[in-house]
Amino acid sequence: MVLYQIEFSRQADRQFRNLPSQIQQRLKSRIDSLVTTPRPHGSEKLSGVDQLYRLRVGDYRIIYTVEDNRLLVLVVKVGHRREVYR
Image 1 (cartoon, rainbow, N blue to C red):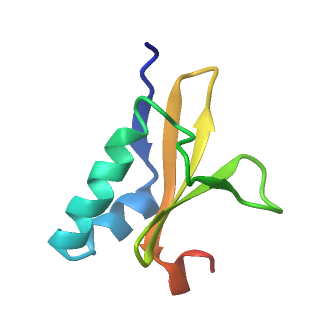
Image 2: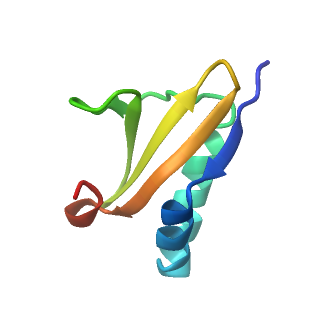
């Protein structure tokens, strides 16, 4: 079984830390699951942007990219759906 590493961009790390702890726990469990399946059922490739994927967790979104050659999942943005796409 291939395991991917998870990294946060500075912006995503700051956004994640500013969320309420209850939301952080929900998001963390979904982010941790990306280690084994970086493109799970329900994730969607964003149109217009190369190699960005979206994962929905309630009203919150995790925007990330997958680098298969390095076995890396880079979380780019985390936030409420009304703010994350800006």
